[in-house]
Image 1 (cartoon, helix red, strand yellow):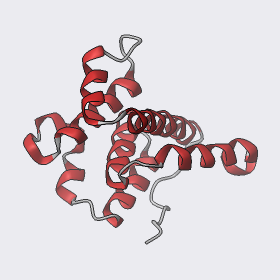
Image 2: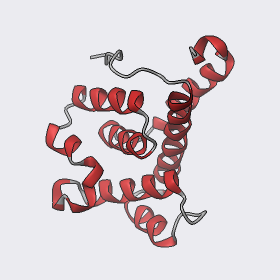
Image 3: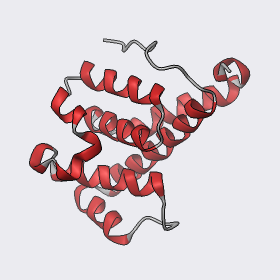
Amino acid sequence: MQFAKAAPEVYKAMISLDAAARKGLDPALAELVKTRASQLNHCAFCIDMHTKDARAAGESEERLYLLNAWEEAGDLYTEKEQAALALTEAVTVLTDGFVPDEVYERAAKHFEERELAQLIALILTINAWNRIGVTTRMTPGVYKPNV
């Protein structure tokens, strides 16, 4: 299915939501968050897209390769990035039906309230995109970043 053609109003709303969610966030951090959520959701199209965008923005191969093991990667990721990745995992998986207080508090220590709200919006948005990508069987490999 070509979702954008089948549901153009929803697609346009998602594009607007995505743009709004990114505002005020570091673009490199946003790509790490989007890639990590996409890994957790097994969305091959989004993993392909966001690793390409991250590379185009100057992200290192090493950090992209180790992203799914970020907790074991030592100081390769900053404390702020680690807090964002922990929040990404907690919001994406919701294994206990909620985000643990310690994960939220960790993120709140590194992000001002407005920035934290933007981060949460970004995580919610990429999870929605992942669900669209996985459900409609979007094919990885065709995306080209705007450089």
